Length: 594
Image (cartoon, rainbow, N blue to C red; front, side, top):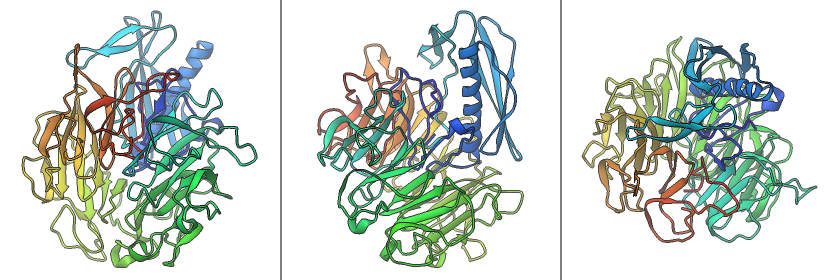
């Protein structure tokens, strides 16, 4: 895996990694593998394995290569290189006051994106903190370091059950004892089937060498059903290992043992991504980007596997189409995927399963955009709500089966999605538990939500469900947004976290358990002032965030120790996760199992 500075993009998600002095990497709910050693960076992450993410990933990968060359030989090339179909190149500016501006430009079809970075020369500096308005404060370092602070604003980064959290050591498997950690309810994969309120190592190993820990690239657990869906991890060689609840052999590893207490390989496949939900598992094949699914495929999940049948499957089944996918998600008995740009129906959304139009047991085209408009990203929830963000920055949605979501416009078999009501232009999108929210292009008050709002999760000062897009009541400018189950959180441009919605589990982070129908400060203060956070991610009933020093904080549900604070008591304020004594602080994280 590429090693990255801890202040860089994370995910997913998924999306990123951190330098060796950092401890943990932010994970996506759908797991992906970056095959950097082969010159190919294939990505697919939960909720954001889309054009924006593929472009961002190319920017990160090209920049990492430049910095690695510079730090190693002292010189670096700026030529254009191709990653997963995206061309990325470097332009070096004129050094001034010890700083060298670097522009990284990525081109993907009609999409071009440039990000400005900042390298030091001579004195070499890096971020050591932030002042009262969130601006970076520079300090000295011994080698070339990227100095541009970057949040994961374009990356959604959670995949969660109710009770478990998993994290990957960003320094890699340096000591041979695994780079995967877990805490929370039993079923963590440590062969003990006991719960743990602090992080513990989980060994993923091949059967022929059970004591040799493999390096895990990404990990995902079943967000909707922690007693049914289990957990899977993909190693850096693209092999998937699964463990946990395995009723009727639904994990797809060829074993009838239930539960599986240790990670066990899925034979015969390699993967770029895996997604789990409601007992169904799906993945994108590393061989050809085809979709495969297995597990629960009956009852209210009938058709979720997409193989043309409605019986549960114990091994990966080819989805009954010839399409190639770049994003895939299964949840609530329905599966959706976005095709690759090279597919016969490029950059389009296909769905199948119980909540799809006519409960189709094979994929059907769900998006019907007029060319050149295409699907940029998609998201869905366990209730059957599905939304897409298009190249015009409009959002289109549907509810379960033939119902509407985000609009009162009637749907038909020819128009299965309707544009969300309201004059908004979106830059991101998330859907969860009947509520959808997105960041908009507005300079301030830039969060818009719609759907269920009885717990205040719309954030407009009311406690009611809304049909169309509704602006969240806050004058702040938010850079990162995450949607949990009936509550939401966001980070503003000054690095403060605000949450709103259902506070029953302490998820607002204000030391109360009451609902809040407007964004409310997760008010953690220290002797030096309020804590500033780099990023935040929400699970079903809990939140994780890390500060600029790399300290991981958690709040929300903790009945099984899933907050990782060495107790099972309620956690109503951001609280530092208990770091093992031999480990450096967390700088990134995954909310898999919250």
